[in-house]
Length: 234
Image (cartoon, rainbow, N blue to C red):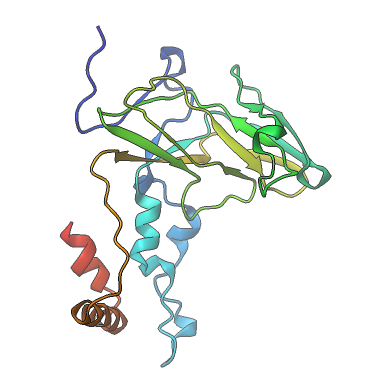
């Protein structure tokens, strides 16, 4: 009998023979890109009275986006050979499982990425979430790789306990691109389906405008406002 999924966790399940072989999912906060790690919080060469020289290293919304959810990496190394200005994509790999297949162009007729053909990375992790929870799958946020871009999607992973593959477009220049095992493939963001917010569209009140202005000025006075007054209160 299948054990119930814990009410507060997401599970990634693989075939027993794949454990320790394919690259494992990683919390997004533990897989920040190297360029971001090397970026200084302040570009001292740009310091002036008119430019605070802060980089996105001090931008909490930018960082929070990269740290949200999980990263599913590419299971095994894949070769993408792009030709004819992206119109042709040939693929290869040495792994004993299918890593890439193709969609038919008619399935995305009119998509802005055309004439680049739609392809699909194969994923070998089954994802399980508690009842009422789905997963949003997006390209890894704030980390474009210049070679491919995953198409976003939502799956009800509390019911659909099967492999989810990831459509993509090859965006790289013509030539051979080697996408290494462990390359961030897709970002998984679980969310509860019920209890969504209703929308309200109106003009702000005087009090709301004053609060907006106080927040703007506090943020300009010191870049720690968002971190101390908003994010850390969660």
